[in-house]
Length: 156
Image (cartoon, rainbow, N blue to C red; front, top):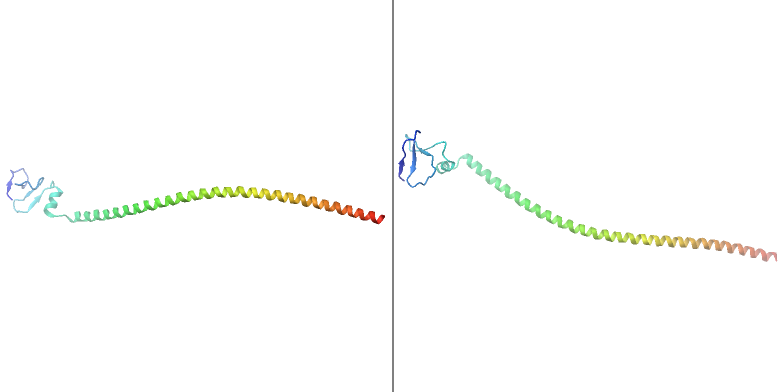
């Protein structure tokens, strides 16, 4: 690769400009006393990465990104499972509500039937009591008449 030296720009190094423009935006240069590239503060992170490879900080950040991505995937899976479980629970709740409504209607109908039967039983009990009272009165009246008839027979 051939390099063209740029004219002096006031900094302590000359700009390194490759002929094929493969390093666009390169903001570094070659120091006068060595052939090692020198990067200015304006050097882009891409250029630093291309020359020196990822730094320890960048590797640490990449590990964090990977860890966070895995955690995100895990949380998304848990969210999906939770949403499925919630949907299933809502379906079961809807079935339970339908069943409870049906049972409530049946219970109301049964309660009405029980009240009707209780009233009928009370009426029968009342009727039976009135018949029993009437029978007691009739028996008492018949006993009284019998005693009177026996008295009359004795008297005769």
